[in-house]
Length: 254
Length: 382
Ligand SMILES: Cc1cc2nc3c(=O)[nH]c(=O)nc-3n(C[C@H](O)[C@H](O)[C@H](O)COP(=O)(O)OP(=O)(O)OC[C@H]3O[C@@H](n4cnc5c(N)ncnc54)[C@H](O)[C@@H]3O)c2cc1C
Ligand SMILES: NC(=O)c1ccc[n+]([C@@H]2O[C@H](COP(=O)([O-])OP(=O)(O)OC[C@H]3O[C@@H](n4cnc5c(N)ncnc54)[C@H](OP(=O)(O)O)[C@@H]3O)[C@@H](O)[C@H]2O)c1
Image 1 (cartoon, rainbow over the protein chains, first blue to last red):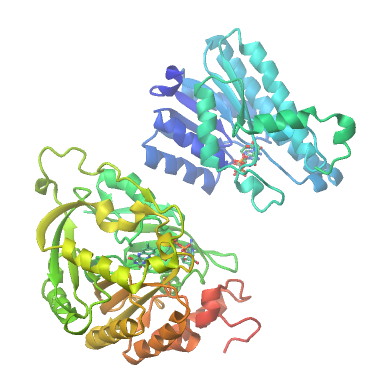
Image 2: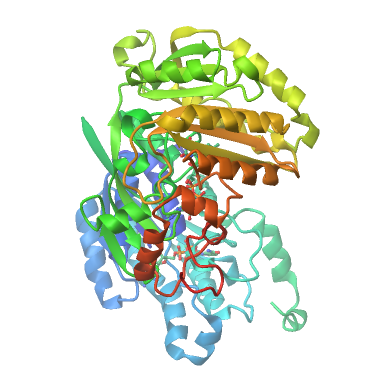
């Protein structure tokens, strides 16, 4: 645990660095002395996020352009990162995601594909590369923000939920594979958070502030957790929801 | 030495202090709470205890990015689209969303202030003293006993200070740019509304006056000096469920003494004394079209809300206008369109500019409709 909190001379790669949670997480890492590689779609937002944490925390920060859906670019992106981090990379945190529009996704194959590709396929493509980098070095961590939505499919968001379920299962397998190498794999399952993703959406409850969520993600990483619900009270909630038999569940309006 | 910070409009004064004070930079203007944003500071062109020296917040803004209601992003500043800029400074959000701003900061050597306290027996003496010696202080403000009458009307305590130089601090003091955080207290529930009555306010004011004998060169940390209320979370609950309203006026120099006297007398006579009354001298105004500060004096009053208060204040508005004074939109909750137009001669010009920036009338607010900065619902622009 203490090794994790000592970030001096080490770096972390955050994928989807413009996400509200990622911003707060970047500040947590910077406060421990980590050098930051912030990957996100290029633009004003990425520049502002990078400049902000650099100024506030006096951190060394690199903005790295990445469009997760541009699969052909992943090789070049990853090679570029490896070249720049040298041997300093302590771990990777994946924050990007796309909630999308369930109703639209049911009709429009492009929307459905975008949801699945952003949350699952792109994550797999990038985390595979991270795993292959860390495994032979026998150290480090991989962390990804999945979702409680992946714990049970619901009619209101099952495209997103299915992709996140896939991501959670992928991370389980990856954890199993990397255990021998001593690489930690942490699955984060956030409940509702007050971010751009959920802004203005109806039916939200127990909504967490992204800064608070980021604190908890960081603590879960420091504690070397395998799976962490964020906030923790989602674990009992989801445990109950998972227990509802399917013949009942399918009748519910959720 | 000058330095500038470029930040998004949602950055608060507290953020600026947290990040930049340890590096020796202080916000150019700060209100009585650090929980305001740079966007809000520009949109109300806020003033601090240093207005007589440094002007209002707008004067420190070099440039800002504005997302207009038509969806355009404009860059403006005193030398670039000055009309849009000076309409936005003090424009209470009606010209568009301020996205970010470049703001000049003040170089300081410490997070401490060297403060002099001076008690004065009445309003006249206070004003004379301010005219005589305000120039020697970057920050200057007077607390006034809103209950004192007759020959003592406007008696108060002057609290004036400058940023302490490193050489003025005790040698053993460590970390002079970031003093240890002050404890925060909380008001856990609404006080009953009778808690603040003329008697308790009188007792408080008498105590306050007694507790502030004349003192020179007191070292006070920036947090205690600028933000006494921030140390008391939910302080508004002191006013009970009825809450309170603020009333802040500014008069030109020529009419200040008469105007202020009338305001204090009328409130006292109406049995509506103020719990907190603060007097300060304003330096020259900036070109902000709806900017509140103008050369002269300003008095800010916190008044416990009672049924009779709105009427009393509306009548007072007319007297304020008669003395050539004006009210501060950031504080006011009651003034009507006629009074406002008399106080702010550039209202028409502002409405004209809004036709260009907001042709479809997208932006509005209760304040804007009440004081006539936008047409009332459905009504065509006059
Ligand atoms: C305890 C206390 C003490 C105070 N002391 C002082 C003082 O000494 N001097 C003084 O001048 N004022 C003082 N004020 C008033 C305060 O400084 C102003 O009301 C300030 O504008 C509040 O800023 P905010 O960020 O909270 O904005 P809000 O209260 O959210 O908004 C204020 C106005 O700014 C507009 N606005 C906010 N952000 C933007 C943006 N990004 N783009 C466009 N428009 C925007 C809003 O539309 C609104 O009209 C005090 C207030 C309190 C509570
Ligand atoms: N908010 C919630 O209630 C909630 C609940 C459970 C799980 N989560 C998960 O938490 C994570 C963080 O989300 P958030 O709540 O912080 O929302 P957010 O602020 O909307 O973050 C989503 C991020 O994903 C990025 N992104 C989307 N598509 C991308 C692409 N093709 N390439 C690169 N980046 C892309 C977005 O970047 P741009 O800035 O370029 O758009 C954005 O920064 C997500 O994985 C989300 O699924 C959120």
